[in-house]
Amino acid sequence: MASPTGADDTRSRTAGPLSLVADPTFRKLWTIGVLMGAMRWLEMLAVGVWVFAETGSATLTGLMTMLRMAPMALFGSVTGVIADRLDRKLLLVGSLALMALTAGALAVSAWAGTLTLWQVGLGAFLSGLGWSTDFPVRRTILGEMVGSARLGAAMSMDSASNNATRMVGPIAGGGLYATIGMHGIYTVSATIFAVSVLLAVLVVYRPAAREPRPFALFAEIRDGFAYLRRSRALVGHLGVTVIVNLFAFPYAAMIPVVGKETFGVDAVWIGLLLSVEGAGAFAGAMAAAFLAAPERYRRIYLFGSALFVVCIFVFSLQTTYSGALMVLVVAGLGISGFASMQSAIMFAEAPPEIRSRLMGILSVCIGAGPIGVLHVGWLADWLGGSMALTVISLEGLVAMLLLVIVVPELRR
Image 1 (cartoon, helix red, strand yellow):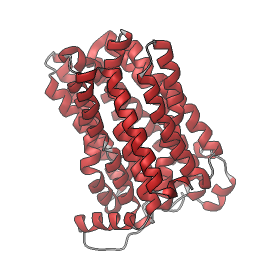
Image 2 (cartoon, rainbow, N blue to C red):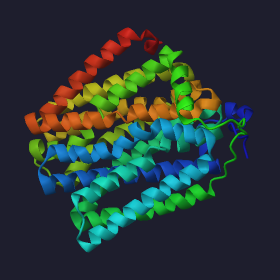
Image 3 (tube, rainbow, N blue to C red):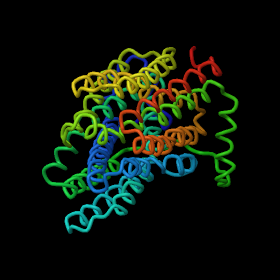
Image 4 (cartoon, helix red, strand yellow):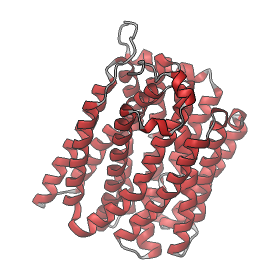
């Protein structure tokens, strides 16, 4: 097996992205990411449709997405510190088991006909708690195993697979919800997460030796933030992450609302709106896996982020379903630049001894999304779904322009 800190760098310099598929450790971690992503989008779509049908409230619909994302903001930095001190493989197995058990319990309740709003909300929060470990645990293991020369390709391929799940997950969620309801959604989810647990158990991972030192949670979190203060470029990088998660990604929580209010379509066609965005993101991420060089990481990241926010604005103005589909395909290309480079930049520039901590801080920034979801949900109850997206996307474009002016390192 490769060294604990990465794959054989001599070999990785001459191997292209396709060599990653031949690596059994990469394949398992990659497959886990695919399964996690598929279940995330499947559940998110079905839960949104179910909550809106049950309550008629855009705010409550957005609240479910907020609950799923909140653990990243609440616990991301803590998870990062723990992942720097404990066995990451054990943490991976534990987080997947939590998601499997949560989905299983909700499936039982749905089959019994006793599923309630508070149970769905609690399930979303617990699933989000498991998901909050993805950056400091699974993606950090993946980055360590492939070596620095293949880091960009590995993160792009991982992003591509995640985006592929955005093609399948939402429309599958809409189809399953329309045919067998929430009990079908949660039964499938519990089964897939159980398979992921088995794959995680089979991952061969030997972490690098760590220097013994007392465990001081808050001091180690403080050390991570202290390092960031010395790097304006990384602070700007995290700023873009916050902006995109506040003002762009919350649009997904409004897709069930816009689908019903503006286009008058059912759950399957609502799912297709998210799926076509995933198709564009998959294509863009695969291109990045083969073409992105380290010196282009930041430009790809910034351009992709800006394109995504612009597309949400254009989507909010659409009055035809076909026009909305075309805009979301382009939005997916923007997402691919953002998502592919997000982990690669942070991992590449983080010292190994605090890598999980910085990846945890990245998770906290991603966790800003719940605030954006509440914001867009409130606006949607007041102005309607489409107008709410117009407002948040304009806010995002202004914030991004100001950030680029204040942190010119982002343009380099």
